[in-house]
Image (cartoon, rainbow, N blue to C red):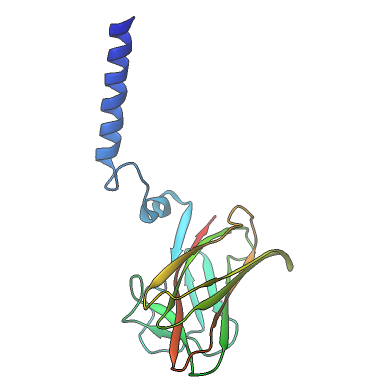
Length: 187
């Protein structure tokens, strides 16, 4: 009995080692691997031109659309570049939003990368189905300090046909860009 169990454990260990070696990320599944399997998609604004006004972006059957003007494409910065952003002038509070849809099909929002140069950012996710809000989640990123912070949707398990992503830069004494990148959705 002991030898058989030992052999089974050895076979199991070899199978696990083979599976880990076959995947470039070991036992974890990267976003690009999930995307290839048809489950998760990163709406990362690929192909948009630096310095242009942002209106609409389409990828993987999804559409990201600005709610109001004021978003621009930053083709130099992103995680990776490009990202979309808006400027919060000194001593003001400015908020902007985008909506994500997929031709009236249901999907879930997993996460969003949010950027701020100097100050905190308030965020809000509103997920709707057939025009009725199913969830509203909000919070604040204290200060990404010139980097991106990934905000995971606490209601990622709820299927919706529209998500509005709202960002608001808080009042500081200097101009501050606020942006977003890598909207991760699942079909």
